[in-house]
Length: 514
Image 1 (cartoon, helix red, strand yellow):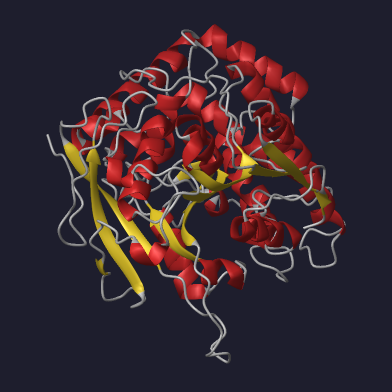
Image 2 (cartoon, rainbow, N blue to C red):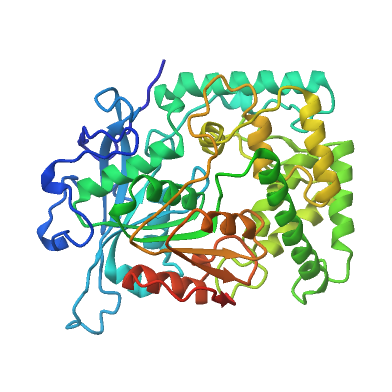
């Protein structure tokens, strides 16, 4: 058995603090309540920040931080979380006498499950971003790779098993059994190559990791910006540690309480609405390659052709890193990502809409490269299979769900990410550690929740569902489409930044054009 640890940044630091249950026992010297935290300048961190690798921006600082594999056994086996810090800095060097007003540390999580917090901070450092200057000047930005992701003991799996072609919309018991057998063998390979951490990647454990790092930073209460799956981390953190929050911004909500069927239908319906918006753009926009065509009919034709015969991917090497062909479910799943980011950055016309149009054109010419899927280690599944129930025990269970999708969400079909979790987790021999449930979250700090109307990945109804679980929260609607508002620039970005800096929530009921 290989149990990988991260040793990129030098010595690790152990914090033997119990976070079992909802109690968080810390030494009295650090157990401050909100309003009692000493100024940041007088609170040295116990984290040993070191220079990052030489090909990273030199002003970034990196660290390892040791936490328990199992928070219920805090003195048991540990592993290293990978961290990166981008210290607060003056963004306008033309005003050298202007005072830098640093507030504390801001944690960011861009979702996934499986998105790297370290990669997000490196991206800020390398390319700039749509993030307002006030964020860079007010906070040390903390990027933490969640457990099982990237430099935090990133999972390893047998890609050869992952590349096996089985039907994930099975039509008979034989196909169902082949799917379950592949799922089981793949999960067992991940456990063997990753080690015991593979069974402890649930979001409750992730939230406790964030709290342990916050305490070690000794830099005041939590400031957290979570997007997509990051909202689930944030909500879980608030449920566990409601008194330790200064600001908590949740952008594009992944709700962790509805039953399987409702989650599936909610997401499928939202994908359908977002698809309609794309079809209209692609057929009418002056910059669209498909202008004047019936793009929805083209979409249906591509799916029909891929159902009859998978579309080749000529650029995929035969090394198990990707599939050499794409099927109709592969195409439907890939479209989710394109619909989430209509513009990659402000001013870029079309963005991923244009890329999706090109992918369709190539597919009609027999090249499915635009819908390729990677066979790399799947943190999305590894985390999701421990957080979500997957109760189907026979093909009839999945056929019933397929019939529902065909009736109520014919455009999206089996595209939802929830379909992936409800099929690809069947047969995993590891217990669901954090099954869906309603939370009751009561915080002194006002939580900010935002969501887009035509968000293909996180439907508006999920955000409304989370609001029912929050006693002190403000909801802001984003009229524009696409997934996540903060990274797109514009009114939503400014509103979230103003909240994080001031800790004052906006008025309730605001609707923004992003």
